[in-house]
Length: 125
Length: 173
Image 1 (cartoon, rainbow over the protein chains, first blue to last red):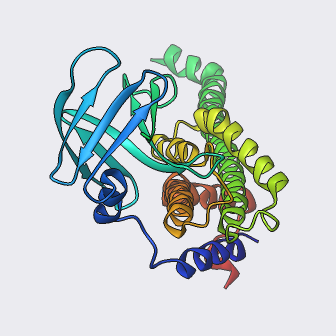
Image 2 (cartoon, rainbow over the protein chains, first blue to last red):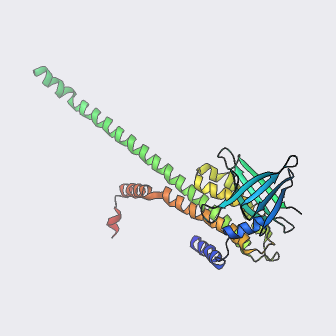
């Protein structure tokens, strides 16, 4: 039972092995090609990412703070988005309406359950 | 001198018997402890194997459903939901009990991926990324399983079986 199951899984994987997120494809999503703004609807904070690895964060009140951003991966599977000095696990997802959004995940206190925090960034219209 | 000789003649047999009894009891007690420890390890290993298998089965169902080509009519929501609930239960329950940090971290990363997964999206990168996360857990579980089963435990189980049956593994051939 188990070998069949594993073979089936690897078959699934190999059938789409050519498709995979890369730094370039994720950068294109994050920046929309040149510059793109995303909004955290919970806090009304707007994140803007540009293809020159610069950007800004504008909270609901106050002026925009310039930031730098980058992407890295330990295994070509999990991608981290570093905004200035803050590192987030980046998950590209879609909501029920089919809108692509960015899920930024952080774990505080080294605890992946109790320390779980996420920010959902939707394209700013 | 004669009285010492008489003493040994009178009590020697009793002394030898007592020492014999103490040695036998000590050996029995040590053997029992070792056997209980081995039995415990064997039970834990078997339980661990069940948990890893259940995890792999849940992931398999989730990935198989996700792999369906963005066709909402083909996607079996019930299968997916059941497997997802089972996976989440394992994540917060039995896997926490095993304290296998490497597998648990991969499982939590996968959980973040499948939370709010939209089956109607046909973006291959989106789908494959989730499936890859699932397969990464199975690989880690497999490694942990073989590490914990280990040569050491298997050797000990075999040695114990040889002792119990009096037949060595080599004797079968």
